Amino acid sequence: MAYDLLIKNGRIIDGSGRPAFHGDVGVAQGKIVELGRLAGSARRVIEADGRVVLAGVRGQPLSLRRAGLWDPLCTFSCHHGATSVIIGNCSLALAPVKAAEREKLAGMLSYVEAIPWTCWKRGCPGRGRRSPST
Image 1 (tube, rainbow, N blue to C red):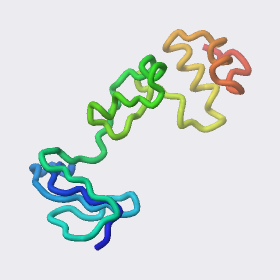
Image 2 (image 1 turned 180 degrees about the horizontal axis):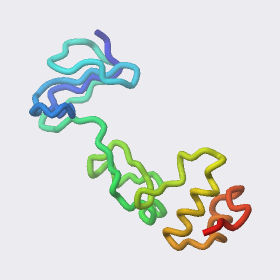
Image 3 (image 1 turned 60 degrees about the vertical axis):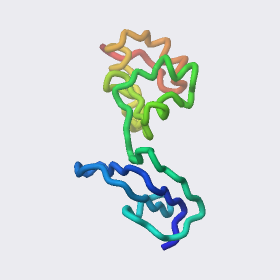
């Protein structure tokens, strides 16, 4: 099989709960399509000898509110092994949210975090038309 990306000779942790194993990871069209000792060709090959290969590590319990201000790409997360970061505020996040629920959610977050409603008006244009009832 031809892969877009082939990661060779890594210590693979596949998230299934089984022990780590040495092998290769074949990726095609942005998805992992095969694991094991792979012989196919690839547009790009990464030699992972001596490295751990794992996908989908999520960094959720991070407080990125302030850190995101000095590094908007949150590049420090990937240095800790996170491949995806869910940004929220103590389990409260403003996205994704249905348009009809925006004001209600912002009002709840304003109340819980003691953030003045005027800040929401400035920070979330079009979402702070009136003061929420608390």
